[in-house]
Length: 250
Image (cartoon, rainbow, N blue to C red; front, side, top):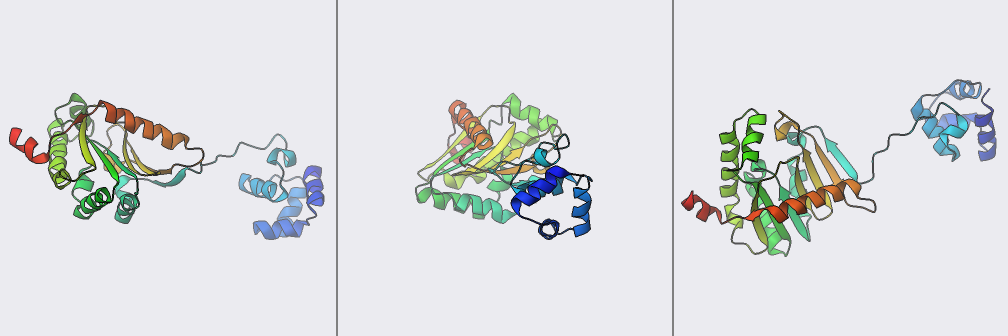
């Protein structure tokens, strides 16, 4: 017999049928729990929440720590390519204070002319836009290209192409583009309190790696870590001349 569960039911003034209805299980299942059968973890958690007690109070020695996802995690996408285009557009369109892009090339964004217009419009509305691209001549970029099995020259070419496509943003006040020479552990795309973090994995193209949507809240541990990383890369990056100037001097 599970006297702990029985007493908790009495204290809550609930009957086994009430538990069964709340959990959408057969009343006989609840009776078996009262007789000593141990429910699955998800049912234990639901019963404990309903009775407003700790799981360990009902099933001592069996309770396991819950795996919780912090409130700041809004979504997880298995691959970058799985993030819908409207999510990217909505992210940057929603910005009212600041936009930040940290990547090696972010070529998939640079090729999106509608998104380039969004960045331009946001800047004209007073939003601060900071774009960090990899230094195409840096050994870090060459290593990344080798690790992705596309070759160092291809990765560098992607960055140069992206820089040209970002060219229309050069003359807009409030937009600054810099080149960095850091080992890129994650690509970060920020709009105010929202971040899309594209994690990187060895021998895996960025488009195939997962993306985590984080939102700054009351306890933004993960988001704050990525924002700090962005700011540190920005501080070490070098301002980039306009795309036209770079093309003429290349």
